[in-house]
Image (cartoon, rainbow, N blue to C red):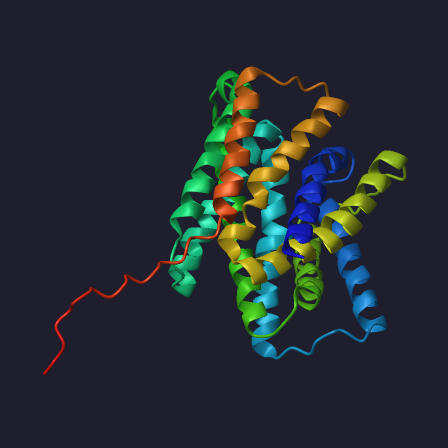
Length: 304
């Protein structure tokens, strides 16, 4: 079951980068995010109410959902979509893939979980592999003020994503399932961003064409309802640090989509990077061998 959820998350989030790019245009970035998570929350609430699976929450649960909505479904996407205006998407993917290490560190700080050596080693290999995959963009992008701002936004968005992972893990330890917490979190995130749009006089425009509406629906159903539910379920089952390795793998799917849709060309360094990422993936999910107890010493002294 975990493998199915893992592959589903990688495939879905690996293809949402193209959909996100198609969202840029007439509709302002915060408005597109409001549309996405407002509709996703509506879909989730309908599913939960029809199936009678909406779990009751106390005040503490709602406050955590509010914080989760701010981190995962509001600030995170504002940072990445804004950064995409100044730095290449490949560079953003490299920054976002540090979520593996941030989750491991945050799980240690907030939950006292020991950081497994295979998780750190696999994450480091994955990041090296991504560096090779995106080396042309990394080497060819001139440093500028906009680049620094874009990188800072991408890093802050990754930290928000990691914080949202910790909050979801906290909710699941309290017995709340991701379907319920995602529904409330998306509603809170979309509502806070909608208030920001009203205060900032950002118009709620709409593009009634196949490109925008099609990409919006893809981001709502597979990208949000299914993708976030599958991923945060993995966070609860596998731990934040191992689940976050999805963030290292889904750029590989994005590259193959880009090769078909945008003419991306594979190079020798890119193939070497692919091998490193795959090896890192195996290392992260390798179960440590149990320590075998030492056999008793023959002829040991016995108390008289």
